[in-house]
Amino acid sequence: MAQEQTPDQYRAQRIENRRKLAELGYAPYGKAFPRTGNLAEVRAGFEEGKAASVAGRIMTKRRMGKLMFIHLNDGTDAFQVLLKRDVLGEETYNAAKLLDLGDFIGVHGTLFTTQAGEKTVEVAEWQLLSKAIRQPPEKWHGLQDTEERYRRRYLDLMSNPESRARFDKRHKIILGIRNYLTSKGFIEVETPIMQGQAGGAAAKPFVTHHNALDREMVLRIAPELYLKRLIVGGFDKVFELGKDFRNEGIDRTHNPEFTVLEVYEAYGDRTSMKNIIEGLLPYLCDTVLGTRQVPYGENGEIINFEPPYREVTQQDLIKEKMGEDWFELDYETARARAAAAGLELVEEITDMVTLSHEVYDKMIEGTLRQPTFVTRIPKQYVPLAKACPDDPSLVDVFEFVVAGKELCPGYTEQNDPEAQRAAFANQVEADAEPTDQDFVEALEYGMPPTGGLGLGIDRLVMFMTGADCIRDVILFPQMKSEK
Image 1: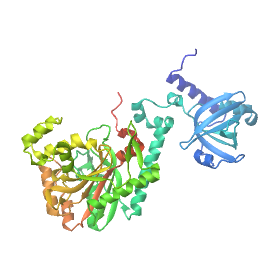
Image 2 (image 1 turned 90 degrees about the horizontal axis):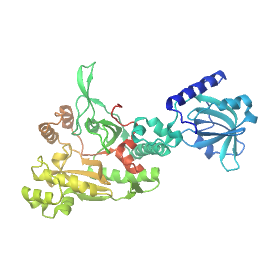
Image 3 (image 1 turned 45 degrees about the vertical axis):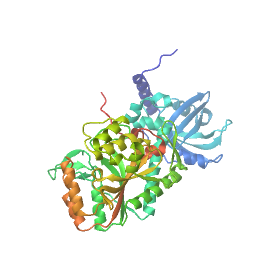
Image 4 (image 1 turned 30 degrees about the vertical axis):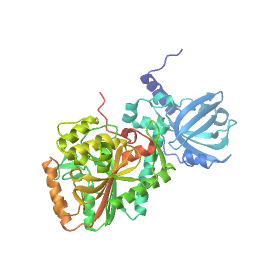
């Protein structure tokens, strides 16, 4: 049995093949190649005897006497091409023997169907477009090492069709979001990614230095405060699709650099944001997935995105779990009941509001599998939202939960400058970022009643593609340095 070559030996052999091809007049990194269309288009427009010019990466190659069968892939499809020695001539055919898996070639020829029923290009001429000098992973059986898939995404994309399909679907989801919101009269805007201070959320920012201005800057943790400035300025309906950055942990649903959609509508509120979610998600299901019954997770749990979605207050959920009298209990009694129910308590929990939030966060949210709007949240957890008219201790917001994870908050936005200044002051006391005085000043010029939402695109793509790790839906996720 012949001994398997090492990666260095494969590379050396490929370099030698490159040298030989160059001597035969085949430039190893060729010029542009005009195509009839991509391989999917050629397949769709297939006609017997039709001339075709196609190109792609060599996926497989096998010789049968005077015939050589090659499968090309250009990312849209795989297609067979056939090289015949009698057609190409001895020299051109023999040169093709020096081609390796992973090389890019272009061919001119004629479409026909083999006796086995496979659509094929019979090659009249071929060109070398790019010589690969490294062996492709697993001989095209797929890159299986998860760490390698994330670190060298190009290998994952070239060898795992399901990965390429997932990112194609991500593109369609983002395009669909833009199409839907634009059709509803929203305009897309861009706000600063590098900012003088972090705002719009409670998170630790990445810090940098602007040399020309000689000042500390941060990468934004949210675009919210700039988008609201646009509402003050007279834009009625705006959205932004872009990157946020938070210098915090990495896990299966968090990446320090992530993509967010934020939407703001003047003269709206929480309910107008709810209407957007109940319109947008079915639209994406219909146009991208073709179904509103979406399988999710390893067990294929079906998430039903057919609206309307359940709406329930956080207090009612807590009472369902902990008893109708929960909010009438004194703190010590409630703490004992929570411990008896299995909640792991920490010293930082010292009051009823925090305890109730912990009950929801640790014991309830994960059980909300179908799309659910959880409303009326304690104000200290959402400092940029407006209070509920009947209870100033709560804010008029929703947390939209799917498969046990928050996908999107929606607010009736705070437009009272004094209330906003007080909320910022409370954040400062909690070691958050200092008050954004310019934003408060903008509110003093008047902001109409406004609804706003923030939708995590990466998590949305996870739900819609069945991925259970955020790294599977980000092309180049943050990774630890290789040792």
